Amino acid sequence: MDLTNNKNNGMKRLAALAVIVVTLVSCSVSYRFNGASIDYTKTKTIQIADFPIRSSYVWGPMASIFNNELKDIFARNTRLIQVRNNGDMKIEGEITQYSQRNKAVTAEGTSAQAELSMTVNVRFTNNANHTEDFERQFTATASFETTTSFTSVQEELVTQMVEDITDQIFNATVANW
Image (cartoon, rainbow, N blue to C red; front, side):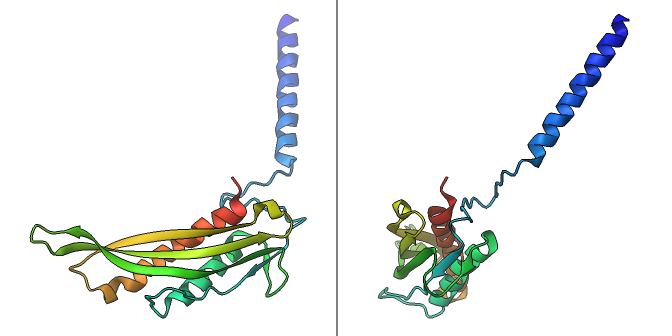
């Protein structure tokens, strides 16, 4: 008889555990691994302006690479609808700096490595919560060996920096850790 009670208690515990697991699984808590934490009941649209180049040193394709990647990161990682005007969120700004400098010098005094740098000024407006509004600069760098032709690596380096900066912007605007 004592063995039967233990068996029944074990079955009751197993059934209770199954109910708890089903309850937890059925709850609608939504976590996204991309870090976006957007209340889609309040925020449905985003307006992303094209960022012009305001830097004294310019590489023509840089603006289109940046503008496309910024729009793409929000399209890939959120359900926000991109609009031209009156977005619930608004991102605008300009590419303010693009420069190259020597980073490392050889024993002979010549440059061994150079660093490319890009800075973007961003103005963010969240019309659902203006306490999150900001104006901030985001910077990324990429290095290359000076034995390599700059023109042969420029697109790759700019693409790396753009991905880094757009990730920073995405995290600053909608990740809200």
